[in-house]
Amino acid sequence: MFASKLLILPLLFASYVSAHGFVHEIAVDGKTYTGAQPSDQRSDLSSIIRQIRDASPVKGANNPDTNCGASAFVASDVGTVQPGDSLTFDWRGADLSRWPHNTGPMLTYLASCGDTACNEFDSTKARWFKIDQQAKKPDGGDWYQADLMQGGKGTASIPSNIAPGNYLMRHEIIALHLGQSMGGAEFYPSCSQLKIGGSGTGTPKDNELVSFPGGYSDDDPGIFVPNVYDNNLDYQFPGPPIAALVTADGPAPTGTTTSKNGGTSTTKATGTSSSTAKPTSTDGSGGVKSQKCTLKKGSGKTGGVYARHVRRAVRRAFGRKVSA
Figure 1 (cartoon, rainbow, N blue to C red):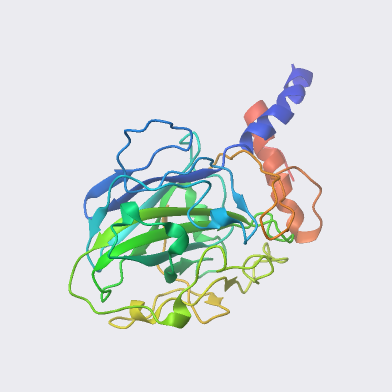
Figure 2: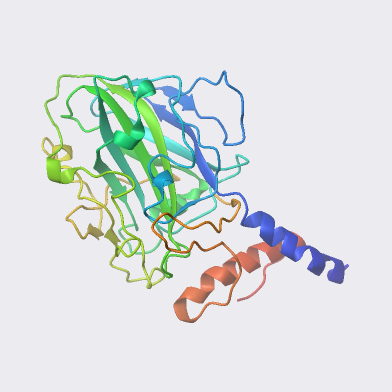
C-alpha cells in the first residue's frame, strides 16, 4: 500500500501545480459579477470581466498578455460604480478551487476608455494609473495574497475624487514563489469594464501613466526578488506610484512596504486558496526564459517553498503531516 501511494505522488504533485487561476467574481455595491472560466467556450456569457483563454501564468514582463491576461477579449457588459465604492475580487483556481499561491503583491490599475464604451475598447491602447497596491502585512509576516488561499478576497476602492467616465480596471496578482530567479515571476492580470459616475475632477498625471507591456521589467526589484522569503524583506512595488488623485481628498493609503517610485501598500485584502495551474515554459516576449512550477532543490531560505509543495502532496496521499 505504501509503495503504491509513493507511485502516485508525482501525479498528485503535478495536479497540485497544474491549475493556477483567474478572477471568478467581482462584487461592488451589492452586485456580484461572475466571469467565465478560461475553459468556457460559450458565446452567450454576460459579464464585465474580460475572459482569458488560459489560466496559466503570464511569464515575462514584456509579454503582450501582461495587458489583460492570456488572449483576453472584451466582455459584453459594463458595470456601473461610484467614486468611493469598494470592490472585492474572488480569485479562484482554473477549476474553481481556491487560489493556489501565497507570495507576492496584488495591484490595481485604472485606464480611461475615453468616449468609447469599455466593452468596445482596445486594451492595448490603455494608459494605466495605479490606484492600489498590497504586499506584506504590517507585522512583516504573511503577504495579503496568502489570505486568498483561505477563501478570502482581494480588495480595491474607486478613488473618491475621480472624474466620471468609462474605465477599464486591471486587477493583478504577481506570484513570486519563484521570484528569486530572473524570469520566475508569474503575472495574473484581469481586466473589467466599468462606468464611473459622480462629479469628481481627479485625473492622473502624465508621469503616472504606463502601458502593459511596458510598465514592468523582469529585473525590477519587485519582480526579481532574490530574498523574497526573508522575513525582514523590504519589498519594493513595481510600476508607477499610486496616482496622486487617490489621496487628494483623504488620508494616504495604509501599509508598511514602499514602492521604489514612492507608492505605499494599501488596504487589507479579506481572506486566502490552494490549487494550481498548468505550468508554462513559453518565453516572454522580452526574451527571459520562463520557469515552470516544478520541483527542484532549493538552498538556504528559499528551499522551503519546494519542501512545502512536497509536504502538501504527501499529506494528500497519506493523510498525515510530514516533517521538514
